[in-house]
Amino acid sequence: MKVVWAHGDATVRDVYETLLERRQIAYTTVMTMMNVLEKKGYLKKKEDGRSFLYRPTRPQRQVVGSMVREFVERVFAGQAAPLLAHLVENEKLSGEDLDALARRIEEKR
Image 1 (tube, rainbow, N blue to C red):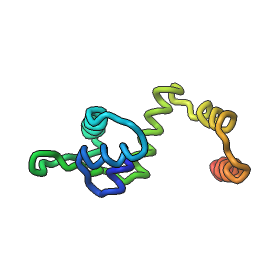
Image 2 (image 1 turned 135 degrees about the vertical axis):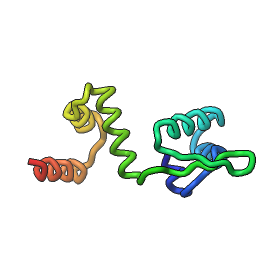
Image 3 (image 1 turned 180 degrees about the vertical axis):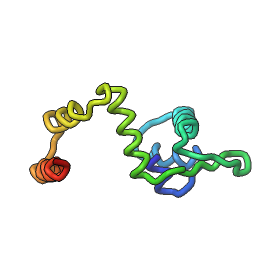
């Protein structure tokens, strides 16, 4: 999704080549993921010659929020607090990050 957002619209080949610069990945894996994202409604495709051109259907912030909610539902039974506790305890958060989290928590109260 990040690659498609960065390009505006992209083919599977565009996404594959961009990801390949950072890590080994199979073309078929990228194609499968883009098809899954299209079926979930995150991407829309149209024919572009012999390939398909994909574009995001929603802004990045909205999609990330939806994906995080889906992740919390599947992994943490819908409870966000265990995820937040895990991130605070097991991730390398700077003092600045922790202060920002504390401010957000306080604002929600």
